[in-house]
Image 1 (cartoon, chains in turn yellow, green):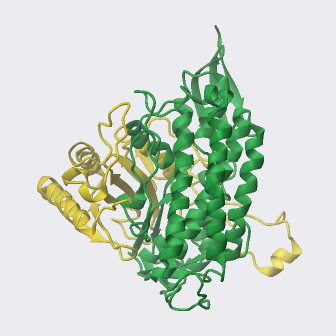
Image 2: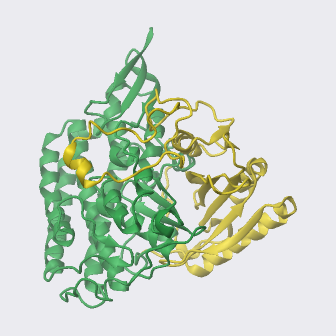
Image 3: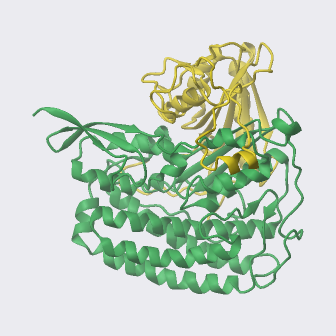
Length: 217
Length: 379
């Protein structure tokens, strides 16, 4: 029978990570705190808030000192009414999982309740608020975690956040010939229901016009 | 010899969906690759911004048409984190069983599609025959054959019907014998072994750094699995062990290891199902009415600005994540932003790069062994 990571192990590991980050970065204004999920098993995770110029330093520390080995997802959000300091936000979600120095020709069977210290899995959520404006930009971490590569491509493609230093940036989900500066998840592109009459008159939707028709893209 | 680019896809038996693999070849040897995705991008994340939390579940079903139940479950977990909803234990057991039956169906679809890639057409007919048993079980829960809209925020739509548990037991026990039959068909076939062994090596650490997860990483010799590293539902209460395969080379897991790990994972799902149906609180032959507090609790419908929800879920192809921000339209009735992390969106570009150095004829074997699904990739 499988043994899962216990709540005590999880809480202890999250606390240790926050202490580590606070001793290194609290002077620079990086906030690290332990937050608990509110559903399911209510496990703890580490939430870090930092500015774009601190981000590469924090990322390298996470990778080399804390042992974060997996970049799960990158989410960009547009806040047109978020004020001057938070017009955009990038959220990174990452994990530390106990996969290191796996020996060749062997099978590593880890048991959840026997993991200690740096081996205990921890979830990370990193918020990077960006100032309002037309050119949101955050340093790329493509060279630190290879897994961030396509996530960053997607975030630029859909939300329009620029990742400085990202090599080979291109459209991944939108067509390659999409207009420059067209990023559909920005809030000025509205989405709406098609009401019944519209469906009835034009069931296949050939007559529908995009809501931003006529605007220069 | 002169190098040239050839294009495989968007219509090609290797792709298992609509995408393009551009391959640079030197004679028969692959020297560079490029993946092009986005052919069936539907903008699900944008659509979800104009839907309330209940209306989003059917869109999540349609992210992956062979694994709808796991995607809806994953979304519902994130919504519960956002809305702070409690889930009754009976509902957690039902969701676990639904997800594991879906995992069996999904792995059977994979095996059925992988067989013809390697030159074994019999396998497809066998797998689809057995998959139908499990789709029938899921149809009894959700009412539909592929897209169930079954998990709810705070529980499940309906209780399991009377007799469902007995039918599940009978089908799972039959299927345990069928797995042995598949292995007799495949593991003793020279063609199967020659096409898969020594092809498409990938180590666990490389895969994790690139963001590849799930059965593909467990094939490389580590039993990492979010069902025990980040426990959710009641996976810590039922009898199972993560499937893990000993890689045959220092270079990591090959296609054969990835096939083996999925076969083992199907056995573990069977084990889990037989245990869960006996342990379910309230008993397998009791039927609670829809909305009963044993299977559904009342959840808030609005989330304030600044609230966030996140879920980590072991989907059939790897780890799926949902990240939701509250405070959208309708005074928080809709999500402000909903972001989906699909395991295959990251895996496909990685796999494209692992093909470098192998022959063109190995491409279907390598790609198929990672179990691509384009519905969730393009979202």
